Structures are given as C-alpha cells and as structure tokens.
Image (cartoon, rainbow, N blue to C red; front, side, top):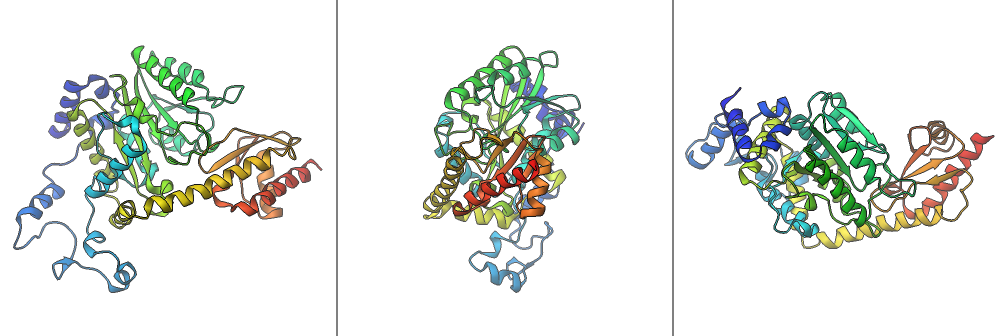
Length: 431
C-alpha cells in the first residue's frame, strides 16, 4: 500500500476506528499524491516568479492562452477564472461561499463540526465518489422502493453492493421510518450499511414531516447504538424546494455529531437548486468531530477525483460563484421558487377535483420537481407509450402502476390540459 494511503488510514484508525472500518477496499487504498505534478505545480505557483514550466496549460501575455471566438462570448469574466485547471477540490472561493450558504439554510449546523464542501461534477459524481470510498461487494445500501434509478447503477452495478429497499410510505402515506429501522437493524451481522436519504424524493416529490424526520434520526441512532457502522448520505439534489409544512432543512445537520458509528455525508449542488443543470456543479461534505478525520476524508476524496476526472469544470464554478455573490441572487431565486410552488399547488388542486378518482390515486407530494400517479386500471408503461404516440406527451413509467409527472417543466396554464389528456389516455386504453 502507498505510504500516503497508509498514513491517512492510520489517522482514521487513531481518530475514528468506526469511520476507518466503513471504508471500502478502494477507500483504504486511495490517496491524493503529495509529490506529483499537481503538488509540484502548486509549489511552483508561489515561488517560480521568473518562469513556471510546470502545469500543462499554455500561456500568452502573462495569462492563459485562449481563442477570441470563445472569450468574446464570455467577456464578463477574466480569462484566469475560465481557462486554467480548477484545483481538484474546487475553486476555494466557491467552496467557502457554498459552506456559508449551507449554514444559512440549515441552522441546525450551527456549532457542528463538518468539512469544507468539495466540488464534484454534480450529484451523480458525488454519489459515485461515496460509493467508491465506502461500498464493497456485498455491503448493504439502504433506500426506499421509490427511488432514482441511478442508485442501482452507482452502488449496485459499479460497486457490487446489495441493494436493500423498504416501502417509502406507510399505509397512511407517512414516511416509513419503521421500514427504515428494520432494514438497518437487519444488517447487524454485517456490521455496516450505507443509507441514502433523498428529500425531496425523486420520483415522488415527497419530503417527510418534521416529526418523521425525528423518527428517521431515531432509527439511525438505534442502528448505531446496536453497533452498526452507518454511512448516511443525504442526497439533497432538490434542496430548498419545500412547498408545504415538511422538513425544511437537510437531515445532515441533525446527523452531524450524533454518534461515533454514523458518518454523515451531504451530497448537493447548484444543478437543481440554482437551475443550472448543464453546469454540473455539485458538492460533497463530510461531518466528523475530528478535524484530522475530515482532512483525511478530503484527501481520499481528492484521490478519487484525481484518478477519475482530475478536476471539475472551472468556468462552471466561476459562473456559480458569481451568481452566489450577486446582490440579486436571493430575489431571483425566490421568484423561481414561487413559480415552482405555484405549479405544485395547481397540480394538487387539479388532482383533488375528484375528476380522475376512477382511474388513479396520487402519492403525497409537497416539494421538488415531480409527483407520481398510482394507476388503478391500466399498465403504466402501456399508458406512457400511448400518451407519447397518440398525444405527443412524455411521462415516466415506474413499475406497473406508477407514472411520474415532472410539473417542473410544464408551465402552470397548461397543467389542466396535461392531466386531462393523461386521463383521456387511460380511457382510451380501457376501451
């Protein structure tokens, strides 16, 4: 094993044996090179005042070389903030700004010990990093039965983990915290599990109540007290889009410092929060009581980044940073929030009219981008294909009965027509 990896492992063993034990085989072996090209280039950047012939970019006129046809479209930005490589951990100013934003939006983080957000190539990359660091073949990865299909690829196919699902809802359509608890305690013989909490949920647009949030924390704590080492990932892709009386904070804040057997990891990003899907800017943040543990986890995370994509897009980070620092940012973001909330409320009013009760129910939703119909009389994929072919309407079929509708991409005046047409599609199939 590389001495740098061994040194990081020794730090984790000394400071937190449970967190060390959570690491995958790859997680134990990975490290960030201290004496490679990047570290030597960083040293040269501060000392090589005459000529700096280290890192592989081209320069011209004391700045990064660039093409005028590109810079003309980006003239609001300095070339130095666009063309050079960003650091593997991300633009330092952006990391600071995102940490400040996290604290403002999650007051429960006040006084807690958590690391500086590490920039990722959006949330899928962040989840992939966590899978690489902590998931080995046969490890249990726990999340609800209504979930984003990429979890299966990321944790199951790529890493060989065992996927453990539990029903998202109870019979009275509350979050199934007892199902979560049972799934965790069932891993006692393994002694380890990864739990993924995604609120607002994709595909249902559901966020639990504050009381259910407390039950989730209790279930996790019970598992930790039973000796199960838990990597708890809060997938906060749609964070902030809370339209009703539900949790309005990430559970990351309550998980930080909860128990030595719990490693909280927040995966979030500007992707959906700031409506910049194509920018691919996300973050991974760890919480741990020891600063040395946080530093070691950051180094291992940087090792994964260096070994896969080297670093994330510099222009995208610059664009997001400028937005976060802009005086108009909060006002403009609130304008978009109210548009999204208006769409969600309209969908609920339309569905609560009783007009469609003979052909579907709908799962509770109160946040995010989506909602799901529970079809009573026709197959979901058959309906999906029929709607596409006859009415040129796109939806997502999930299993036999569930049809996901993204109200995020349908303007409010057209929502009534959308659901009327879906209803007509069901009637068509009923014959």
